[in-house]
Length: 357
Image 1 (cartoon, helix red, strand yellow):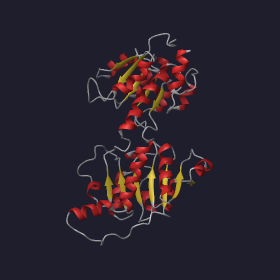
Image 2 (cartoon, rainbow, N blue to C red; image 1 turned 180 degrees about the vertical axis):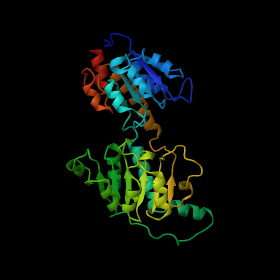
Image 3 (cartoon, helix red, strand yellow; image 1 turned 45 degrees about the horizontal axis):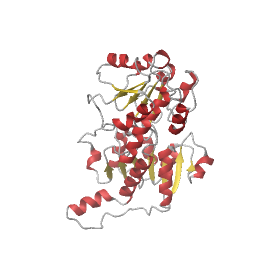
Image 4 (spheres, one colour; image 1 turned 45 degrees about the vertical axis):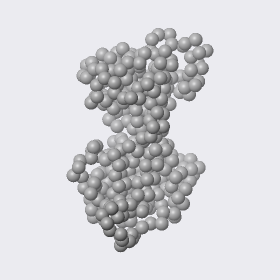
């Protein structure tokens, strides 16, 4: 027996820059709604006024790069039919968490879908930097066969890799660095030392200690007011001149001007970057011409398998919210204090079983 006692409507919000059907992944993203007998609607409007009207007629919204004005939250949650918003991706950049909590809007994302991909991208940049690949690839392709520029080059095994943020991705990076024989240290105010010990990480008390001790520094944090420019000129002054920065998290976690200055002045040895403060990166950005900097275009989370998982997770989390469950990837836990009680988050298979009982 289907447990839905009224028609459930899921509203899909795609990128504002593309009208109509926004992604070839819609079939996967809509599967959960269809399996539960809900209606899946693609938002076709262009103004905030049109979106407010659409939200009045939906139980939950799915967001893939649409851009959300915080004032929309005043029409959702405790003040409207639409109880939550699920966003595609790991972070929650640009979300007004406080406004969502105040208005009883449940926010979720697709965290963990690209854990292996992002950690692999981190490892790739780490190896490129450690072996000075950018420089030597350029030299060989330009007809120069020399070992003149090898030193200094670290041994890797026995060196120290510092991780800021020990969530799913940070722990995956730690696991892979340990396999290289590295000492891994971590900073995360929300992770206990005894938990970190289980996955071989020595916890430290501050980001500054990460800077001082590490041969490689890799942040894996959300972008928040606290983490914005966490890695700045003061941080670079503490790093070893032979150390590298690897950033596959969020661009603004690093003060890019300070990074460029640190590289130009030899304060650090180099950097591996998948993200930047401004994206797409400006063609004239000095980082693009540095032989000790590897760059990729913010695709660390991508593989066909990972994005398929994210599409499925997006749909399932939306249906959890619509059917009165908590989502598994809740990003504003304080909202538990401002909404009516809900059923605990359960697996999709359990939800389907409960529906049929």
